[in-house]
Amino acid sequence: MAYFGFDNNGVTAFTKAGSFGVVGTCPGSGNQTIDSIGGRLYDSGGGLKFRCAIYTSDGATLLTSGTAKKDQPDTEAWAEQTNAELSSPPHLVGGTNYLIVVSVDSTNFRIAVDGASVNSTASSYVDGFPSSISLGTSETYPECIRCGVTPAAAVGGGGGLIGNNSALIGSSILLGKSALIN
Image (cartoon, rainbow, N blue to C red; front, side, top):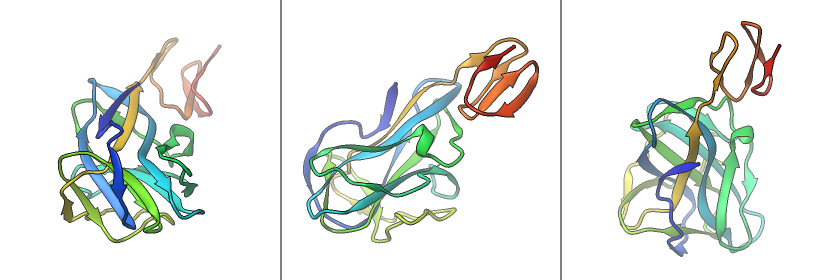
């Protein structure tokens, strides 16, 4: 798996409710399957939630988001939503920029920060992301937010590129996990 965004441990210091995003370039070339989206978080107050999303780089189009809010970890760790927890996860295209967003519901959370700039908004979207987003406030130290991807697998036998929510049966595509069924 390859990551993009700010994929390092940073220094935990930032406390602020809202949504945080970084624009990153998807690694590789061709279609890439999203494995996870997340941030390096921890809950310093108990019971806090987060949710993640991927947008086009300008925030104009929501591509996928977590289907439900999740608990933030009690100690600093990568808090992520996996492929199975995303709404209709699309294939990202290697070499293309995307906006990776993590939203949290309270100022009692902490997020690890790096050393460049990131955009944020005071709006929290843990109950659901909008179809487009504007993260206009630039922070001095960006949050450690990342997206993990792997090259999309080609499936043989009349195949082509098949996503994580498809199966190839003969030459017909049906819903289900990726598999080749003769």
